[in-house]
Each structure stands twice: as structure tokens, then as C-alpha cells.
Image (tube, rainbow, N blue to C red; front, side, top):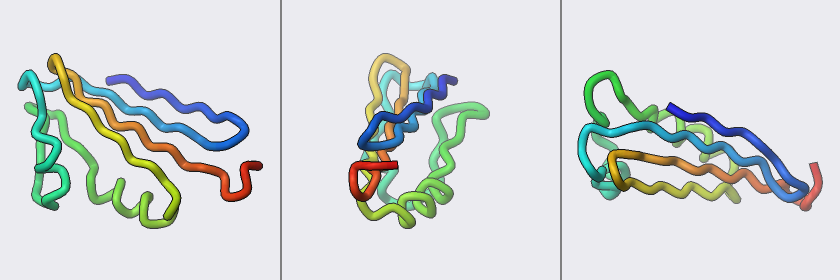
Length: 83
């Protein structure tokens, strides 16, 4: 698992990546609201993520899956471009 946190003058970035059992994860299933697992002991805290994103209406939530790797990129822009 990889976790990256950083910010620039416009936003904060949270990037979480994890290996997957399957070559690719069906990203559409993430939006269905059902329980979802990436394999043994690899779970996605989708409920917690939805709660966080609900507090930041300008947030960008980008996901990708390829070559046994799932990555979630969350961008939380500063409202006025300043911290």
C-alpha cells in the first residue's frame, strides 16, 4: 500500500494505492454502494470516503485500476486558491 499526501497553492492531494488480486478492478462497482473487496484483507473504505467527499463539494475523486494496482486520487481544492 502507498499513501501520498501533499499540497500546492491551490489544493491538497491524497493518493492511496494498493495491489489487487485481479488484473483490473471494475470501477463501476465502486459506485453501486455494495460491499467491495480488492482481495484477501484488501478493503476499500468507501463509506468513509463518501462522508469526506460530502464535506467538500469541490473535491475531485479520480480512480484507476490496471496491472494489479488500484489507485484513488482525491483532490481537495482551497476555496479561494489560498490555504
